[in-house]
Image (cartoon, rainbow, N blue to C red; front, top):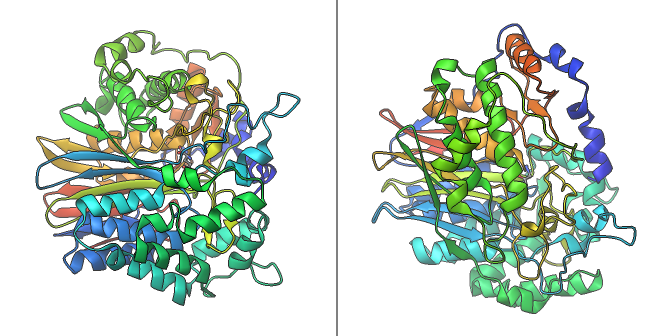
Length: 571
Ligand code: DON
């Protein structure tokens, strides 16, 4: 998947306004609602069915939500190679039933020690996309193995060997390729052709991809997993697996050294907290921008009678758009790794600041935005979110990623591990948009050891101290607005999570000044928005929310149908 392919594949995102009128209908068209799974004790919702079953088996055997989540995380590295990973990073939000504590675990990648601010800027001053996204240089030091092992050691009840056994078996014995995976492999033949090791795993000798039903075995990945299961995370962070990663880096001009791996640490952060119409929101703090802007947008929206204005009606969508613009404009300026420059989190999530921002929102007109961005859009199958709940009430809601689908497309030789291209989430040059069209400045400039800014937004919503909803999504810059709409659909519009998930989504990120809308918007709403001055663009499906909701009938789980192959299963 080259940058050109991404452009080509999604040309329709840039289609002229006219196209939108052909995509909207007189009445809102519901997309198919995903199955609503109800269970009394526990629930696992993930982006891939085999991995969901691995998690449910652990819960059934008496493992807690953390045991199951870690098992799902390792299993997805095998069964959902486009997004599940050992070579990437992410964020886990945990809620412990015992003491009521909520914990934010940051296992985001870090820039290697040899990284430098302008490492992706070429002699002409342009950002070298090939190096930033599709080379060994595009990989940050992976955090997934450290993050999952940390969660298990501190909050789990089973051994690493126990929870990794299913992943090892799936890698060793293989599994029949699903229709969903076969489709992605076919799309990404060129992307996966980037390294001999990835070709060897995902393509046949004649360079054709594995097809649905064919058995995909990953012996090198099984070897890596076995080393980690036997020796713990140090096998990856300096041991046999790490040594292979570093040898491959050295052969291909990558920067990750053994020392970088040894220095890597997952970090506990204080979750950001906010309130929305009597609910408490607990979400991921920087270096994810997700929690901060989710709460900032909710703060602004709380000043409007959203329920009365109605779901996906013109006036509601106008206000949501204006709110999104303001949050993403702040993101471009203030957000980055808080260990490198202070992020004004308190100010950004304060309701007083939201009041000020709200005053500048004109209910009658779109506020102009200066200057177009230059986004390379994406498809929404590159990151993955899973949510696990156990009988005791422990909750894990986790988003992790390689960044692009199959990351940089490069497998580290001998390890079976796909490398992330998360370095592109930094601002390679101030004001130059990254792959998601997001712009940034100094706060998100590259520096050794620094974590690139993320949009990943695992979140838990409580009411009167009891959990109501746990969710999260992939989707690059669209993650935060997808999660926002999940919360609004449940809290403002009283939907159950199947309806909340199926509802058409919209997105604005300040730059470029475009309002992306999924199919299903009514023609009346589209007309209203255009009249207000919004520039509508028809969007490919945005986000893949995998959620659990607590109801009087029991736990409800829903896997978003925008990506095939997900599964909600309870017990
Ligand atoms: O951390 C981030 O915000 C991005 N690396 C996430 C990438 C993503 O969600 C891709 N897509 N579906």
